[in-house]
Image 1 (cartoon, rainbow, N blue to C red):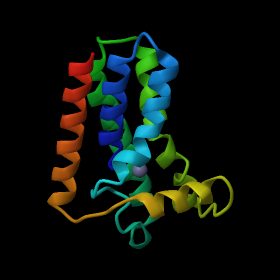
Image 2: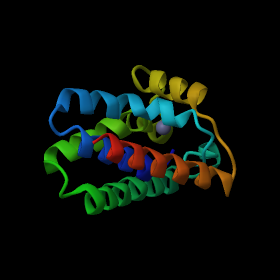
Image 3: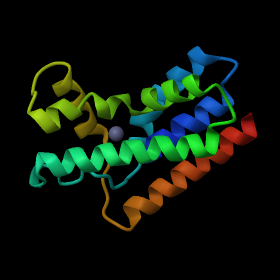
Image 4: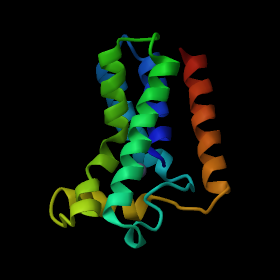
Length: 148
Ligand SMILES: [Zn+2]
């Protein structure tokens, strides 16, 4: 999914697990491959045909935007450092494959993350690729709010 979707999911998890950081950080990390199994679109779609500069620009903008929006929504609900850690735990799988995509670092551990992501990610085209993602994020935010 987009970095923005992963950031919001990490944020929602952080907001409802402030009293148990070890649990919250673990769930944030595990959430990544699970939600990536839902058919979605992201900036990695067709990455081979994009220039490295474009890919770097798009993925870092996506990440920065995601962190900003997550802080706007969840910034006052929990400790800001904890919120940031959950966001990065939720993004970590994609961050770990970026060196493979951007610098052709096709060796461990980046190649392992790339292969895992390639096998578990379900892709779909627009507009479904964004709609499934918006529904997943909204659903998770509401469920986590309810549990909390
Ligand atoms: Zn991913």
